[in-house]
Length: 303
Image (cartoon, rainbow, N blue to C red):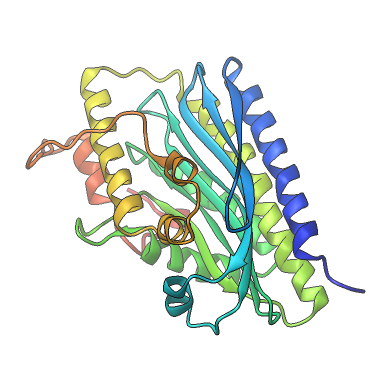
């Protein structure tokens, strides 16, 4: 049995984009996505969908792309592959809620292939709460682990550790949030294994609206005031710093002459940088900073 072609994978990812957008609109109950279809001069294009006027979500982006063409030298050197034409397709999502009590969430799944047959899958899902809530972190990690375990019990511990390392703001010495999973260069040994990895990526994609709808419903009605909004914007600033300084996907998109507006859709609508901001001792903000660390076992965490 032959494995799916890159074109078939791109169509599957497009369908996933449709599903996710529909589920988020249902969960919000008010806002809708608008679509921006674009073409890349060197080959391929995509559909960027931006969420607007929501009751819970302030800004959201669900982007699909399928691009191809000659491999830029900068990318070839970074990936350490031979000069070749490439094909890359995927779905990338970032959601910024109105309420500081609802976490930011990110998900990305992607497939990469060279003309010589070299290929791999990559992706991940991670949660960035403005306020760390132990129960929320535990629930999120349990949901992610349950999906991983359906495919390989080794996936969760391995990919959780990779996420801790990847989603780390080195110049701040703090993680972006409570982590999740991250994987890259996951290649198949045979056609059956190829289908397994593809299905794993789709399972992560389908988990996204399920788990985030839970947080939208649970946390959006929690009370907050001006102090919490200020903290939300400071944490959003950290999100911006990671995406512009460290995120490999942002760099890949810009280096392959991707569409800048779509690449930067992950930016929050508002953010703040307060010079030498200090949290109060014993505050929820201090608790959050103290738990933006690598290696926390959220499944078994207790205060």
